[in-house]
Length: 119
Image (cartoon, rainbow, N blue to C red; front, top):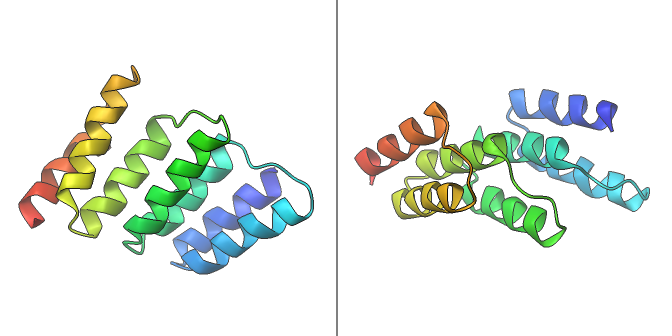
């Protein structure tokens, strides 16, 4: 899983979010189950390209698989919403994060505030 995570992170840095999603799908086809870290890396790849809908879908998939999102996955998804000018989604996720007992990070707060400014 470490190799997949590293590759997805590299793809994210190059803003190749579609390839990152493809790699996530490929690893599942090989019978490997993604963990929180891998999902977070893929969400981050989407975030870098303002692919907020895809980031939200990945966060949803995490929950459906019984992988509770952490501060990193929430913050990256909120940041994706901020980049996509989706302030309502960003605030909803911020509240959801608090409801789950996760203290929002500085990134989560600043992305939410920035999303409101863009909206």
